[in-house]
Length: 140
Image (cartoon, rainbow, N blue to C red):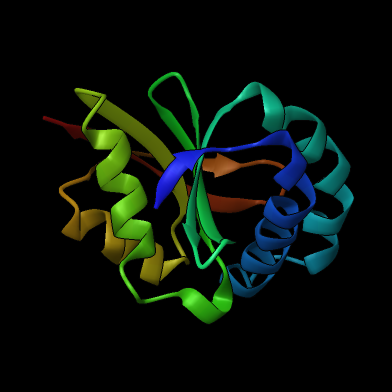
């Protein structure tokens, strides 16, 4: 089931955020994610967040700021089971256009977004970690 995030789930969601970022971005020092944990935890409630829940457990979430996808994060034990696709489809239903940024070295994520009809529109450098990221866009 996909539903709106409840603030009482903040610790669970942040645990998924940290674990997923460290595992998906092995080309970035894990301390970068740990150092940004508190900032993201503070900002997350200001975003529009939807969680994917199964058996009363949050398995993943998607964060939006207007039509910008700040991220899709799925518990490592639940990946490749359609949860990310379900979350993305859920927000596609209520938006005619979406954009996001993804690191160029994050091949699984890029392939996922390309399969979901996102197009690469630009490349830029994330100066925080000195890595190339792709700006991707989707339109209905």
